[in-house]
Length: 233
Image 1 (cartoon, rainbow, N blue to C red):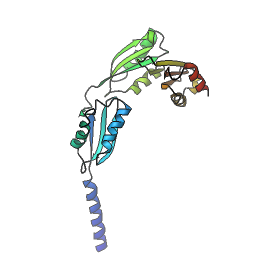
Image 2 (image 1 turned 135 degrees about the vertical axis):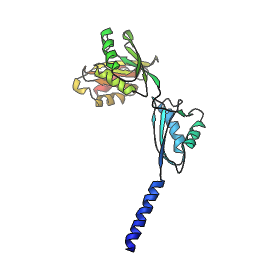
Image 3 (image 1 turned 180 degrees about the horizontal axis):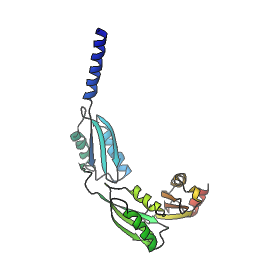
Image 4 (image 1 turned 90 degrees about the horizontal axis):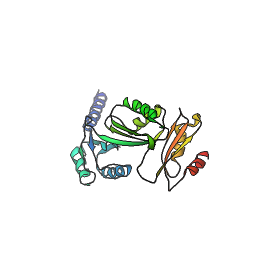
């Protein structure tokens, strides 16, 4: 009987210990966190704090979601540490607010107004699209969207499903674009990864319906001919 009571006591104590370890979470806006380099800076601040269990960032919303042990730290302490950096000050976040972001896509296979209309129709079904502006002559498409409702990735997927091959568009004069016709069986994620591994390539996308590979690259680092040779290898 004593052994049984002792075992029950141990179980009770273990349950109590587990109950006192409470994990809370905090999600905040960090407007100064605009890129991966910024996220690394914010990580450096968070990593120095006691009681942090995990964290992740959403650069489109510019939010940080942090799980922490409330016996070792608090939401106020975390916010204070970030606010002390000046650049990465926090602000309240709500999933109900509208966070407008813009994405500019270069679409080489958007040749005419009919193509633009097809893309507009495809994007109409994406929740969170605020406005769209196709520029057919330049093969560019500007989209304004709510980052709390959709993402750049979802927008690109919708355009790709419509039969087109979007890649990131940059205003810089150094940015250039290449478009290759490839066998449809080669229009896979492996081809995208191979293209992204080439020096000077900033973005790549494939379209199995068209058998196409589109690339955004830095003209000072590579050329269409060099890209072609690298892809053949």
